[in-house]
Length: 129
Length: 320
Image (cartoon, rainbow over all chains, first blue to last red; front, side, top):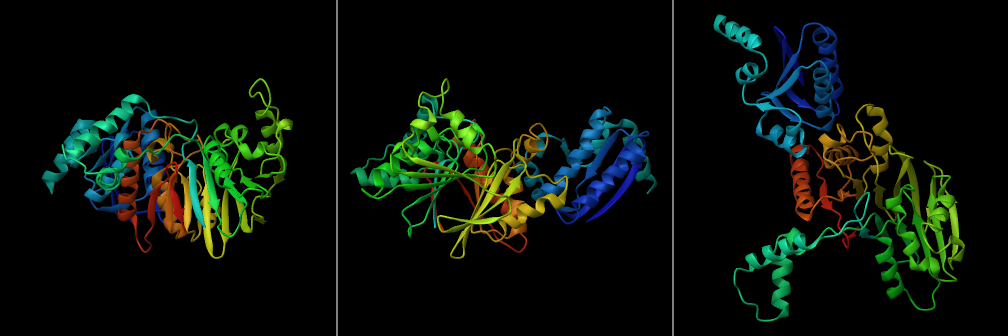
């Protein structure tokens, strides 16, 4: 599993690749806990979790998502899952986690929905690239 | 060993109502598609082989009661005596060899109502000369059963039961021999505590683990459960809620999910996962959907070890 995080104004974009299961779910949770301490307790309000490169996630990994979502909800923030592959999407549906979090097809769509300022920053960064 | 399920629901018994029955009849008639049947055998062949399972069957509505059948013995080993115990009692009374002493060993996962409510209707308890042995890790075992058979809740006082009834306190983690089987209990996370049982004989293992909430909060806390399930031939598992419900709105309600069952059984290299303790509001269609989804999740999550899946229904028999 690999995790990387970009910050776009009030939104953290966390990219998760590989596989999240019982062997590394604690690392996944720790990353999200660090976000809470370093970002969401300061200026952060929204979390985008980019599952584009995620191969699979088990119950242990799904629990980690919940921790972040609860924190954000308490602060009137939001969390969106972006672009899960068909396997991960099936897991989200079977576990009924698709009822807990919005799932969107791409980062731009998600950013536009939850944070226009973060969207503008993201577009601007893309154009510079 | 054979395992027969007499009650597979949790919390409360339930039953089908007329609209649900009529929906099945409608589906069956539609599937028949105006074909004619030449005799009864061809009708049964259609019912058993051509109709979808939730149309031709029902999961039933009795609460937890599971019989462990050992053909080498004439005594009975039973896990929990929910409302399904009434039908089990009927079967015992019909099939027990005449003149032979009736001995029943009953393991209690815990003392919640849905796991003991069938005992006042358990006919062998009323037969003079019969022996009933009740086993649990709870100190309140005897007082709970006495309280259940007492006014104003039940008209027959406990002391009027004709059988010789014995209460046995088990120690969690200690193996003991019951009905020629090695039985080991493990404490589980549930209100007022519950206990899972590992039952072994002649190289075959069945685990009865109901009313248990398995949490990822502390991965170390899952180790005793993984050990309980280790390489079991059959794990009877509380899959009452979806994973989302179990860790959000129903957290600390003391139950688990199908997803958690698959993940734990994969870690434990168990062979067959049996979904059990179904939510009483679940229709047969819902239980069937959950069963198929569990099979699919196992396919998706499988790495080295294939786990087979079954969903327990009243009347199901599994041979190990």
